[in-house]
Length: 110
Length: 342
Image (cartoon, rainbow over all chains, first blue to last red):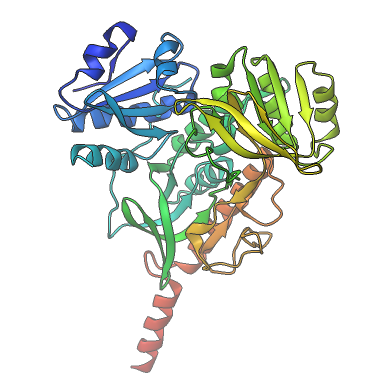
């Protein structure tokens, strides 16, 4: 069962920017209710896309520099990276089907 | 906070299943409708596109919901309402509704996950924050542009932020931001606030809240990564100016999320849905509750009250109109008419 893995500033380059596959980064915090509401959906998606898309999460309280680097000033924000750059930004809690559409678009090279 | 508050995603539409009631919108009105419908042993499904609890999930301390003498945190109330309703049997799905149509006596709720069928529908989809409609607003969404001080305020500690608007929401959220930001600039297009007297009193007594009157925002400025300022214009003198802010919190009003209905039910000129005192629209089997209806007080307690009425009205409608199990009264009437003819 794949689960989103926690990344931090020191592992971000290797885990996200240099990854062979697209990487979804979930910017979240302990105090963020909507973040908790989408967490189970991301767990399910991590399972469904195992091997195709890597799922990660960044605690913005612990690593504000990562949020700052990508201009994230609202959470939940999901960034999907491809080849080291941000390909898609998804703001706020969204239905699973909407998230899937974003992921499929990335996988199809859109 | 309960971590198991999972949106029960993944369950697709079941083409032949007819729910007793489908509720559109998981805010206070929808969750209360779901609570009452489920307690009445109805097969009830609630559809929500974002966050359980609706607007209260995005507020801080709620001081005017009865039963909580010291107030209660909005996100906590949201979770408790969700848990209470689902404990009573309410089914939920995270999806976006795109339309509602009639198929004889059946109400079809169209979503991005396919069609769902029901005997009755409660529309409790609330509203959406009105946008400024200026350049930079979309581009910098979640990069400094926000509608939720409680959610995003923590990103602006020690910075200068702007609040756009002069009503209760603008001032309430602005006051919250004064505890985090160095300074809060309230930009209002008139020369006085519309907010309630108690909020105005607090606002004028708060040293790090200041007011820029008679002014409108014309552009949100940024460095492609984040917001760096706003360009405003004084509507009296036409004089433009640039304010260096890193956050822009927009509270200029609210519009009903009624687009899913098209012109299926009667609405007023602002697209709020007209309902009877039983929350019934002019279309049988379609009810509306909460902020989406005409004359809503837009309070948590009134939304919950509407939800109760709509849930029970839907129950009454379904029991009366679908007496013979799955068959509607119309079906039954057709059958008795044909048997009488034999």
